[in-house]
Image (cartoon, rainbow, N blue to C red):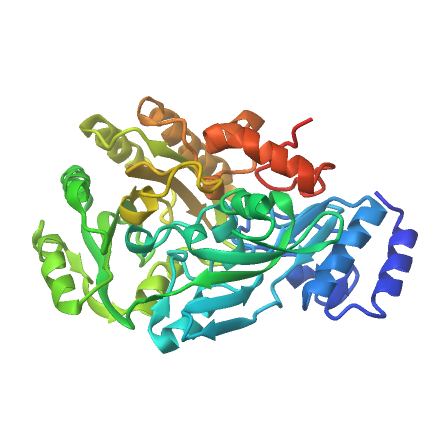
Length: 458
């Protein structure tokens, strides 16, 4: 790493033209700027470059390369593995880049790299438009899209990355490129699922669809002693879902902090309200639920419904894998493991994939998981650092218990910071060798390696 005196000199020189802020550990605002969503991650960058535009990103990348600093890139800062920050290196922070431009006639939106899904949806829903985005609205557009982008609309409109038209990206050499189907097409293929391996994406252009502003959806909760029945009902209902409907199953805790365990169905219908009412009748009738919040609601409300369960600063440790099937034995194991969950903020979420997200060919984008099925997310979350050992152990033990039912497929956005390198290769399957070649073309020195890293081919 460069000596502090050299760093300070270079920072002082860059500050003459830098549009945003350059923060070192002694500067006002540094302590707040270094924090990310997951409170379990506590790192101290040598420099935080809070960029205002693409030129700032270029200068920051060039400075980091000149000084030999490790480079982390923060969009929304939501990634559970803490890849948005780095000890003693450079954090390129896009959080101030909040531009959202909606073209109503063309049904497109161009957004900068620091935009969250709440900010994205606020602008697009003014015109009754949306694209697939995160189910927690405080999630950043950038990280979620680059790693895949599952969300409410994926049955009808595919993943977030399936709705990309183009990106502007700053490469490891400090070049600004546009990538689309017609320009740098290999790079465009790679960023749709390949994460932050290929550069810093300064802006995204999305295709929009008519959605809302009123849709039908919400959450139905059941007593935990009915959890097996609830998850079996969830499995059965997902065998024949139309594209307009998305359904997730969950083992959760009551939001009042009481520690009461519940089984839940989280659903959305994205079409005509009358059709939505009809489609949701079986969900509302099953059980019946002890809490029924399924009905006509604004699309933006559905997108923020889960936010309170994932507050900034909470400590998080997650494990995740796709399931080969949601068998009775898998359900029994999930329920037995959740009964032992030591934190009243913990949850297990089963996310169903179907519809348009599964019609895209495996090799059409870097994201390879196109089969109809389920993603299991074991979400351990807590506030008291004294319980960290117990809470992380529960997630690992639950993941191990589910080994007989796990497939080899992994969703990179949910992978932690303790994954073996071969797990990244497994997450991309047959697409990994092609990703390695593109990595070698655009980042042969692996400058952008603080991610679920794709090693450049030799």
